[in-house]
Length: 484
Image (tube, rainbow, N blue to C red; front, top):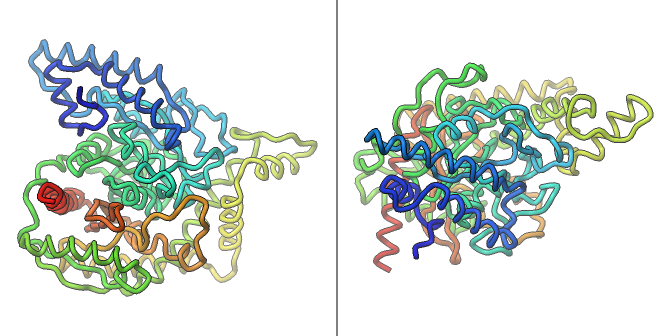
């Protein structure tokens, strides 16, 4: 019998539509996969079996009604999914992988979670992450690290490591992560799946526990480009609960998928192909660029001069905003409340016991920046403006830009990176985040037996174009596999 957890969303949709399987049967298949695979992967922090089965029962009832009416089934109806544990879920623990929120149960759903519920996607559970989304390996989780399903001795990336690992391991048909400086794209690359960081404001941030408010975006993680487009369509759109949500309706990203790369103008950002990049990674990405060129795209090197400055600006902005956002966790209103005999001890003990080492360091750095007389935060915002202008000039000439997702392949669990490797880990992904632009991570080949990630960046609201290019790369990879 076919393993349902290995099938893509459109294939599962057809089985549900034709009555060959029920949503309850499908949910049970994924729950069985979670029970079998979690001891090796540790992608989940909370498994919501009762909720998943109740959602699936409701999906089956809806399917029967639609079938009787002769109406089409929504594409995600009955398709089991999971959410990163910084996306609020009413009545379900939302921890941000932190002792600070270990027992926090939100009284409301995030807008993205609510839209998936309305689409009829059963919720399998909440996924592991780096604490408060600060990290690149999911090793800063207060509970346990997640392992890479492709090789459990390796990190899955971060901070959305659980989101990528669950999809790669067949523990969820799709997932949502969050991306501040690369936290969807990098783990997607490390786990061989597809991850999208949408245009800032494309998806409502209501109910996403804030890391850096001017950077954070929810993004879908899937096995294929077409599936990613389906999920983004379901969760995008205006939201009166989020003042930063864009007023544009999502439309369809799927319509343009098969248009190919012919006549597109694509720039290779030269700064992202320098000596800091593993030569094998560089070769894999350049080979993908070559296939796009053979498909009719014009490809040439371009420069993004502020790329290096973007790293410094990102560190300043993200640390400052994190420090401000996490000030609310003081032991008074919600979150961990430590033993104390004075008000000052309440604040100190709760934050000391609740936050991990990495978070404490980032809070201190942000507090120092915000109190600096040199206006470091303001200077970082000026660098962001310059970066946006450079992107605008490039997108006046090019349809999209491409680069590696990460300069390096995933490292072994427990191995510390050098200061230089830590500094450059998000070098390729940070600029699109700072500029608020969409960027897609898609597998583009193999390096030492593991999939390598290609990043495709575009102007604001160009997600459909990025999916089109990603699909062209994906199709080339598939043909190459079939011919091997």
